[in-house]
Image (tube, rainbow, N blue to C red):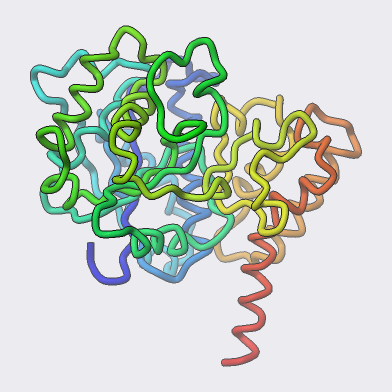
Length: 344
């Protein structure tokens, strides 16, 4: 990547119209809309250059994502964001892996081979929203020691608790693969067991009958064997609905600092089962890039209050400070912008 350029990678695959379009895992409109909101949230909170690599099985869907994401943006935002199309690729002897879990979910395992000229990138699920500047996520690369090749946040759930989890996993609670730093250079040259791809394929071959969550399970198996090669992100960089359910906050750091990335996995952003998190997503969805961020923040707090007032479905609403947990990082960023403008 170029100096001061942040590189993200998204996967848009199996999103042919008519396949689960209403809401299901492969719905094209859902994936496109979530991708648009993710890209908007990243662009709104930085002045640095962002480059999005988009792995897609359709140039048409890729073009639609780029156009609908940036068409109505002010020019200064458009100038800061670029996109590259990356066609889907699997090794000929691994084509059966394409349809595991969700179509192309395992594609990221092959990125070091697919992207020979890229040094490092951050893989992002499309169902994420930034609540603080994306460069602060990128800066974790600088905290890697000389051996670490990847970073992910703890899963805190599923591994070791779910009857469907039957594979080895990293640490106490496993890793969630929705946000993943990948030092591709190190993966290409310094990985044990014959190399990055070979290590992942060996994990797949050994446990394929037990794998439930495709690439995430495979990555957990690999880093269970090589924990010293993983840098662990804090849970605020991958905050999911279950983390604020049952009346307790399973990611305590957010009690004092707030969430950095909200992850709407299991259709949280598009269903009405967790209205607090959906309120944050809807606020970002309706935000017009270039409008004051203070306006976004006050609208978001109002939507969150409405959820409590109308008693809309929400496990997270049982947490007294949930509105602050979800919005504090955005509030801090806005306050810092104001302070900086006074000191210029």
